[in-house]
Amino acid sequence: MTGNTFGKIFKVTTWGESHGSGLGCIIDGVPADIKLDEKYIQSFLDKRKPGQSKYTTQRKEDDKVEILSGVFEGKTTGTPISLLIRNNDVKSKDYADIKNKFRPGHADYTYQMKYGFRDYRGGGRASARETAARVAASAIARKILGNKVKIRGALIQIGKEKISRKNWDWKQIPKNDFFCPDKTQLKKWENYINSIRKEGSSVGAVIEINVSGIDIGLGEPVFDKVDALLAYGIMSIPAVKGIEIGAGFESAELRGEENSDQILAKKKKTSFKSNNAGGTLGGITSGQDLVIRFVVKPTSSILIERGTIDIHGKNTKIKTKGRHDPCVGIRAVPIGEAMVALVLADLKLIQKKNK
Ligand SMILES: Cc1cc2nc3c(=O)[nH]c(=O)nc-3n(C[C@H](O)[C@H](O)[C@H](O)COP(=O)(O)O)c2cc1C
Image (cartoon, rainbow, N blue to C red):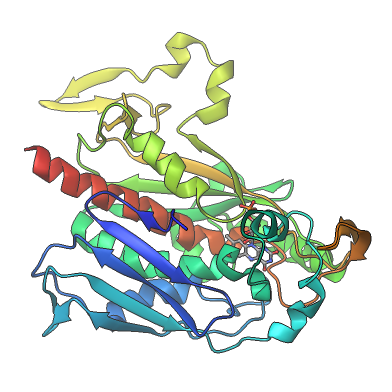
């Protein structure tokens, strides 16, 4: 099986399954002499971990990270860094029903068809539990990017309920369970998610990631454009069905003079009058903020009965038991930030080699 490694210089290989004994990653290509400890990595994992609010899965995992290699006396040595996160709250019996049936919308059917055998417990390797390893690796990616680069995510839409952009306040995000920048939306979202959950259903969402303080010049023409790699990284997150950069799909409705961001010089500094490009021109960062939006589909494991087939190809019905996120978009916020950090750290190291 290939496809478990991401990046060219800052190379992350993740491993592990939802209900195995643990998961983790190996990160190769990390420069030596970077201060690193478990407490720092943990702060990022704590943002993603499950069971933190009633709006996410009730699976309780501490997601405690252990550094197994590549760090000595609190600094990276330049050798591969291996990180381990153990699984503790595993209830595999909840998944006995899906052993022989395929959940519509999940990866059960394609894994079975591809490999002829699958770890059905909690979705196995297809579970978003795997993304804990990416979040851990992203803590190191952020060190490479430096403090000037700020990668911040927000949940901007749940189902049909969108935030009002004029109320956007970054300071609100750590204060609520939704990573929501618009406090006027919170009550509505709470009621909405509660009613969806009570009905045993789920709902999709849109996440926006903003990167400020990024150097000009990251991104390699032509296949490793920054926008191409962002799309690749973000689309690799489970449940993501679409991504846009800057004005994105809305740019189809704009005229040329509305869409292109005018360039001007102010006190010998270049600036742009707008940011429809979302921080990239020709696949190379322009120094403007990178603006990325992505959509996640509604969780496919729901309590509402659905038609499916069993592993013998017979028609049957399925209702998924177990603990599931009613909206995966909430926990997808720190995961999106993590993927963006992995892409940019790799491009930064590539750019260093170019010079
Ligand atoms: C943070 C997060 C949590 C998720 N939790 C669940 C879940 O509890 N139940 C579920 O059926 N899918 C969940 N998913 C989505 C599945 O992992 C995903 O739909 C599945 O692997 C199939 O892949 P695809 O949707 O990309 O085609 C989650 C996704 C994310 C990003």
